[in-house]
Image (cartoon, rainbow, N blue to C red; front, top):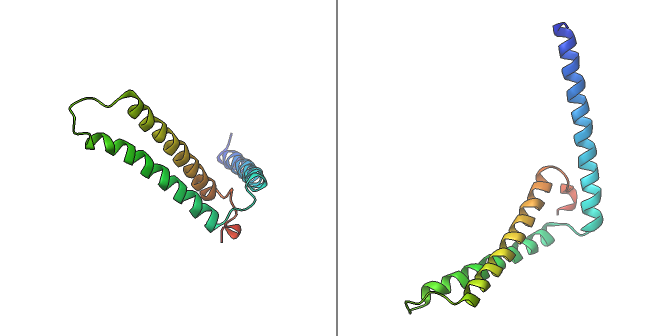
Length: 114
């Protein structure tokens, strides 16, 4: 195989991958907008604020352990509450990260994010 053939193969591969990425971008854009039709700066900011509230709830619950003046370990229900709040926060944060990733990959049209 010559260098010219290798170059042509490389071009075909790049073209193929470009077409696949374009199809993936189109499919994701359609699917996201079908399920979340109102996606703009206000809705994204509202989502970010809710994630922030969940973070604050989690940290507040954890911080209360430090305010416990007794030498006793926290009760199981206190630990369970912290775990639940941590899980809520982590799930919401991961979802927000997925949204940011979708925006960066072009799955969310920037025109609709006004």
